[in-house]
Image 1: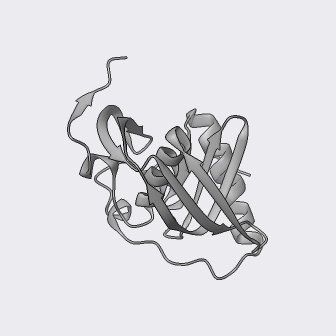
Image 2: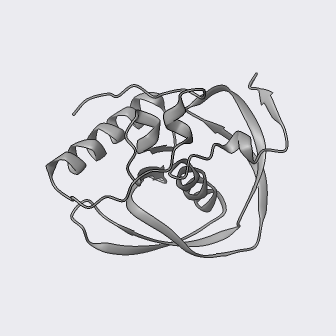
Length: 152
């Protein structure tokens, strides 16, 4: 396991669409382990593979002492809306106000290739949507009503 470098806005990798994962072997497991270690060190909530320079449809989210590892995720349902501030490990020192669905249902695969479903709402739905956008080359600043320096 290793801490990976989190690339920053301006790096063209962050603007590319990620590729589907077809191999659920040791390389994918090692990437997930590295991403978790990197997320912990960065004190973040979520991290997508493109943020560490890997164009694969993988993200992780840490919420209420649980880690969600999502491979080839698809948002299959969404409802309602919520508006709130977001920040990003790839856009350091800034935050912005973004509208997201209040509730979502995500289908994804775990590191062993087993399909699972997560129903998320409120903050967890926001985090999943934020990381999901990374897989399509979208940053929260593209959707934010405003982006400001984070002086908190």
